[in-house]
Image 1 (cartoon, rainbow, N blue to C red):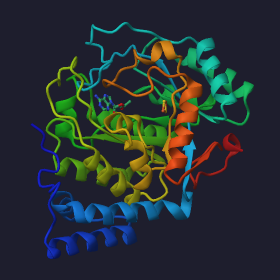
Image 2: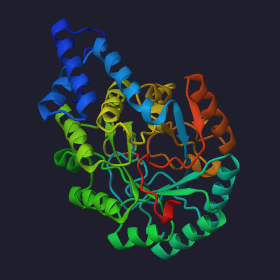
Image 3: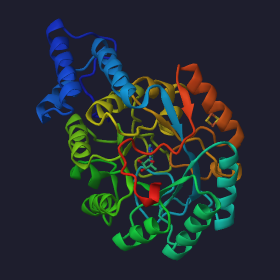
Image 4: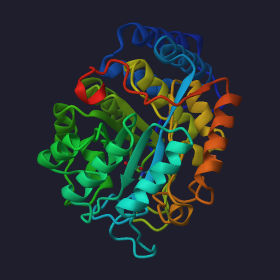
Length: 374
Ligand code: 5AD
Ligand code: FES
């Protein structure tokens, strides 16, 4: 049973009156960069085909003053599929016994970044399950090695929840950005989707710690997860406005048949694009990836996201051998490809949709230039 956007009229059209109200709310959001709870809910409960186009165009226009049609590329290294966490939707959570586990060591990670550097990438995203193998000391050495080898790169970590002290050490060792999706801003839904030992409050605490330390921070959420409703999605919009992260990763929930949540429906392209577009209007300057999950759901999912306000893509630069083991959801794209294939593929796709690639470090537009970023 899927509760998301229950009133969406996929093939239907709203009355002129409802459409006019939705479009005036979208105009108001474009102007004021926020709406009231009930106003967001009105949009989500009533939006239909003739209004989505209006929303999508507004969201596309909203990124143009800041980013034009440029798409930042980040090289993604999936460093480990060991995970001690219990996200019930995720295909690499600690309970899954059917996959072999792998982790990349320092030299292997650096080798992936070397390949990425040659391909032109200047941001490397080191992402993994929550794997205790990566102590602060180990990561500090890795960060320092990468930063002394290349002085014109940014490093993004995406390694889950760690202590304030750990985040601070990693920042001081050279990490610039941190991605930690909040997953959902609804406490009820968070608790439904995660093991009981996981904490909604701690996740938020981590995000505010990361911001306080000075990272460029990425939050984000899934669309269409089991029991998610429109009110939950409104909570995401309100929370994102309050947190005001530098990046927001939004992807459809994709049901994985080896997880506790097997048998549920996945999120849909339209629902996800609606949320991407709304987030672009709420945070016009944020960096918004066209996610791999969207590309997995639909062949042109990522390209569609660019058309509704996304401006980042994260081509995979992991070793081809380990890619299929990093199966957070099934049928993930690019698992059989090499880094060079993904580089070419992404560029072709971006250009085919009237965008251009940007290989600069691509910091958040208003980031304060301190010593670290000079
Ligand atoms: N479907 C879609 N996204 C998923 N993620 C994890 N499992 C799934 C899934 N089954 C997302 C989570 C996580 C990010 C790395 O991938 O939002 O934060
Ligand atoms: Fe990897 Fe297209 S992005 S093959």
